[in-house]
Length: 160
Image (cartoon, rainbow, N blue to C red; front, side):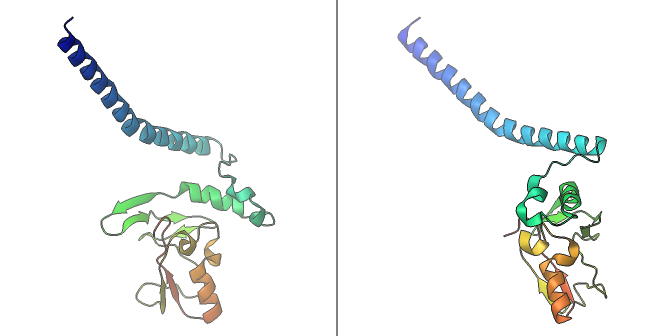
């Protein structure tokens, strides 16, 4: 093999290997995440007592009986992508988490608030959405309980 052909062969082989590595980096992580979600969903469907989220075992939840149910419900939440809004939750009815048909977290404290009748709109990320707390313990629910003003929770998980 001539030196020029050998060099061309080495460069081509290295380029092909490099492209395969790039393709692997682009394909393997999303496939692994999809596989994990599929296995988790199948496990939850087949065994209602299976608990996969360790957050309910944290010390701050030690004396609360609802946390395991809450994080099981949280793992079942689904999201949809919307232009300009980005993520919005799908409708969900649970014991600790309730999301309406428009994708907003709801708290049941007397009169039901809507964006048009609420005196206070609250925006934010996971803390405002109420990750880790029941509907009645979200920041908007707490504010409504303390002030008597109708509040509306526009918070969304992973929103910054």
